[in-house]
Length: 296
Image (cartoon, rainbow, N blue to C red; front, side):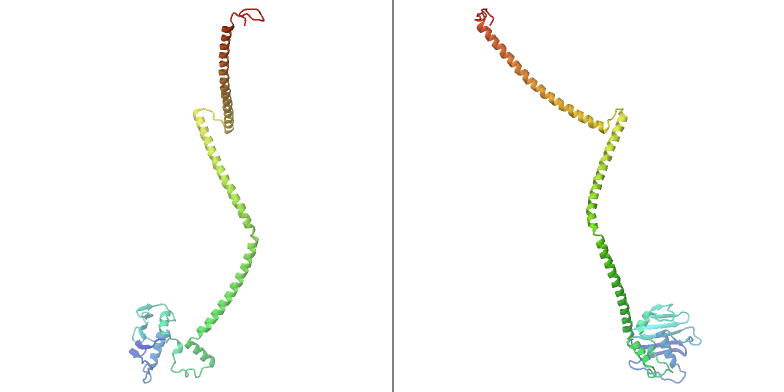
């Protein structure tokens, strides 16, 4: 809670305009009865807690304004025409019976900060439980209790989460053991993928062959020439290769025949030459066996 510096009242109950400056230590308000001392306390409660009587607007006025300077900030509460809070120029509306959180943070005040005129002596007439409660409100010990409760709640939640996580882990381990065959399936899947790839490639080749056959058939229809089927084409290819082999064999025979012809011609020439030499040598000579001439 910041120190209160000053309080300004305008048309608040008995006060048309009143400025009250607070002392740094203690401020005492002195006055005769029915002079508005309690109205100042009501104004403080109204601006700090948004609590107070309904009849706060001074008789004959249309609105009441209470401003409280706290530290370096100024909090203003207005009623009449508009029901608003203003904090350093920032306006707040539609806050109901509560104090806007930003203003509550600046003031830091609660009902424990106020002692009414006819209230019993502060704490002296309270029970021990009530005094403990009030002390907790002043030093904010309730934060410890609420923190412990929150920690306990979160601890229970975490224990539940840990139990659930353990069950899930056990289930996952069981599932892992059940799925050991997946590694074996990976190799089979790779093999199937390879087969599928080969199948797709064969399909592409088959499609290309079909396109080629279709184009050939179209060309056949265009020129009127019968286009053989693939089997016939294969058979024709084999027959052509056999004919080519026969042709090569015939070429080899013709080559050998040519060599034999040349040898025959050489032998004939040699025979003619020997025959001529023989006649030239022995022409007119009598054969000693047949007694004739020129018969050798």
